[in-house]
Length: 366
Image (cartoon, rainbow, N blue to C red; front, top):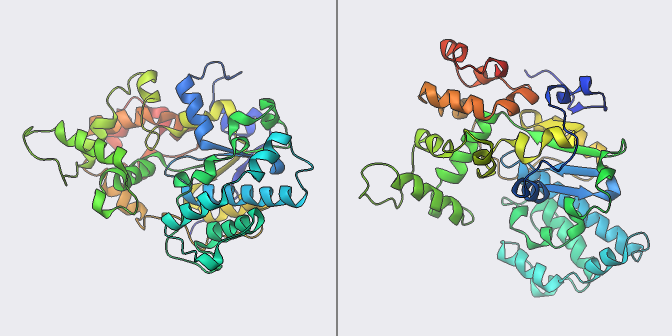
């Protein structure tokens, strides 16, 4: 039985949080343009709830982003009901110009059944329908086997003020009233999950096309002997995948260029600069999400259906590492060192090789 615990909700004292393990970070001038663009891409802002959330890829991202998008739609409905009285003119204009025909057809393309007679005739009706789709996966208010992937919804990217970069005063998110939330996961489980979903799943077995990862799979295959073989339908081993992603990661520039599904989330979300004060863990997602839900004042949402859950157990993920060579494991420990240290994850939860762990020169991680 797992002991009951609370998510990590911190005050501003550096001794009370993971921040005590961070080097002093003063401002955002040291973030490269590429990393800043990535932080903006994965961070959602709800000013009405004094809430930001950095969505770490492969950490229940679809589930959490659907909840954020749900609250965003609720806010738009509230703004419409007030005729935009309490929001800026630009924001009110964006909301009134919402293309309901375009977004309705997009939902149909994603498999949501909407008959001609059920088509929303007004923005208000459309938004209320969208709430049902986000919460239930259909417009009728009953649970459905396939949920939407928010990353694939143009609706999610149609409102600039939903993004970090749009904040008129960036310092607002560091006020005591703001919740800066992040959910994290054991680095080795997250990495194995990324391999299983992005690399070890072939094109014909995907729900939606992933041409970028089909290309990466073929690149890995072509780098292996024999060179003349066909790579169509070939799944590289986990070891081959690890060797591929480790190329260039001995430099900060190389790490910054990694795909964000296996890039360290301490970098993606700039955890030492943003000073997150709500840290949920994937391993306790139900409990921590409920705490997040209360803080966000999201009463009509639960986790009865988890978007994109793989069905694999911790043991299944541990097996990926059982035959991985020692040198690759040591390189991974080095790569994800900050993720391990800042969020109290242990290497030996996945690697049962005491002698190796003693000799990896990364003992601060263990």
